[in-house]
Image (cartoon, rainbow, N blue to C red):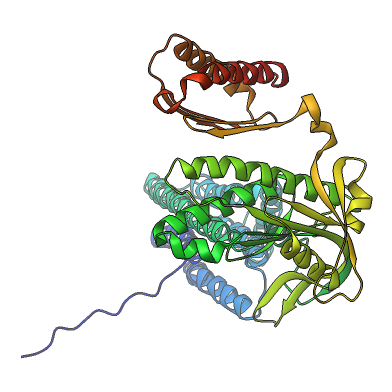
Length: 512
């Protein structure tokens, strides 16, 4: 039994190659029309039989043109340049053909329409004007070489009809070519859009493994992925969760994973808002630095870092309140150490695998301060304190001895920003039986203000009228949890007063 023969697959042609092939077919058809008209005129006895050489030349020209294109491609000559030259040579050859037709009106007009329509559609006005000159030059060469009279030769109706049929065929083929060109262009655009979308999706995935500042510098071309480092003054931040190893043994794995991811997500969000470069996560530990690849100046970098740390500690109070309502009773507190100094920053590693990070004694000092810190505290070095003391309320802790440093280190505890001190306090967090309230006046959106005030007023009214209240409301910068059944009767009036004070502060500080 004979096996069926498989047809060989045709080689794949991209849209540009298909367009080039169709263009060659259109050129071939144009000169076949010209050769057919000339041959018909010779057959009708209008032109000398010696003009058969002209018929052969008209049929041979497209093949010569295709050979020229092939040679040019082998020599890496630009295709657009070759196409422009061939277009002008086509016009010159058609000019010779008009001379061979002894400038018969209808056949000559047909050929002129064919060649000049191609030039206008492909090259524009300038190419068309040049085509006119080349056509005139070709006609002049034909007149001088063949001794053709300049007076047009009348032709029978049959030859005129044949010429118009040839024109119709060429117009139809050109329309088909234009339609294919449009389709190929659309396919190429779709392919480009698809590749762009793939690149965007890939870049978004890669961005999750890189600090946004580094990712932005790489994709904008401002920074290259090569091994290079530099010395720079940075402010370095370290934090971790106190007793995380013990907590990880007590919590179920899925609860621990969910809690840790929430913690890291919120800390990352705060760090990015202040412009910090997130270096790495090491379990529950977070390392951030300010001053590279973008810097606002050493003083501003240090202030942003300390302001970020203060906000992180305040936000941890809200997270503890939220986790307690989810059944996580462990008191999760973080320790933060900050130092400012000169470090080596850049790409470390090999050409095939590199890491953008920082190294130096001042990096180690920030890590040691975090280890020496009490839970819920922000310890900063003397170098950082000098830069932020005018804007951050700090308390001197004195000198401490840290591992790896022979001399004692003077440290300070950062409490709050001076602009948020006293009555201007930015954060309000209350966590008690039956009540959870968190307010961050700088994070509340103005379009949420009305809804928050209505929620506070409605809750206070229901509590005052002894109505059952079981409320959970969260939005950016605000959270309220109330369970009237768990509220002690003696605390109810205090809670109503507290809700009123929170509403008043939001009314005064959050602008619409």
